Image (cartoon, rainbow, N blue to C red; front, side, top):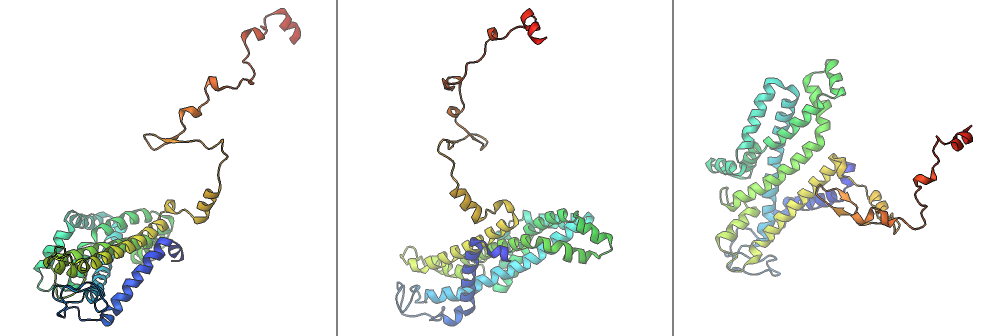
Length: 342
């Protein structure tokens, strides 16, 4: 955890996520108005009374944004928990056991990978009698586990051949203990990365479902705000305050989750880690002027020196000694050479 927090990207991303989490918890209590209450202030721009303006029905946009944050985060993280648990169970079990269990679970995962995710969610959500936040989170989680299971299966296939796993099996450790104690801790970074990616996908899915009107519109989230703004032609009425704040919140939340994922990738992949001290040394260290030569990139991304950097015969300095000729050597077969050697 300390190594993860050492990344600047991770700290920035977690800071933004913490801000949204605080808003999700206290947002309904600090909202200045009821998000569904109508008023005579129709399409008012941002002011002291309405910080982000009002809608065509006089509803306060700032209150809708605060209340809607909870719905987005609840659906995003709850569906990510469901999908991550399913992917761990299916992926690790499939990779460790092998055989018929591996073939069956892999075939099931491939079916979910082939099916288009968002249309499948739309069909299932539209068929359900109730489509609240918890139902939508369950639908997204049950349809979004296949990719994480595929990644975990591949990692488990590699880990089960390690010496410590073989030793645990040789001394008679039960299967569940080998998986939980020996394999699962080594997959923690991959699981966290898969969890963050699932949160991003779930947030975009619930906002899309709300924007097209598939889910219950009585529960506020950022997609619901965009739905009513689009339905009432906010762009045509130049009511930018109706849809811009929700769009900025979506972009900011997605950026924060992406920064956290980048930090996890740097932790998992050592090739992406460049310590700050090393970078500083490289910046401070400069080659002498004669040694700095321009390089060119050619096909294959191989850096080569220009042709002018290769010494040519004409570039040999005049002070260099002349090359010896054949007349400067005395044949060994001559009497003088034989007498000198003897």
